[in-house]
Structure formats: structure tokens, C-alpha cells
Length: 101
Image: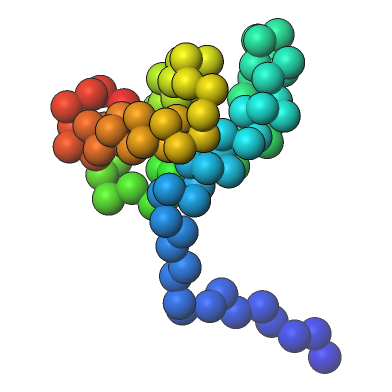
């Protein structure tokens, strides 16, 4: 008899700060791929962008645009904490609908 998989009812959410911290680290690992113009769907970056979108109360559909904006911050800010703080501001603006993200 084959067991049927049942999806858990409890939904886990991760703090956006943690996701952004991980994304910062992934950007460091995927820097060559991003600079070479590789599609983000084929990198480790994409799952973290999806987590941010799923975590947002607003509606984030354009992950490519979100990635471009976060990447610009990454290039300007060498420190992880500054990257997370600046990225939080972008996410807040996107959630409020102020930024077509």
C-alpha cells in the first residue's frame, strides 16, 4: 500500500531580514553568473527572490526587476547589514505599491 503525501497545514514564514542576508551571500557566490548575464532562474538567486515574494504581504510578481534593484544595492554596499537595510526599504516601497515592482 502506497502512502499518500499530505501537505502540512502550518505555513512557515521566514523573516525577510534572514532571506536578504542569505541573498547577500548568494550574490557573492553567483557574482560571475550575474555579470555574465545568466538567467537568474538558473542560479541560486531565484529561490531567494521567490521566498521574498511569497513572504511579502503585497504583490511582487516581477522578480527580475526586484533582482535588478537588489543587485544595484549589492554592488554599491560592501557590508551585509547595509545591504539588508537598503533592501528592506525597497521591499517596503514595493509592498505599498509605490514602486511598480
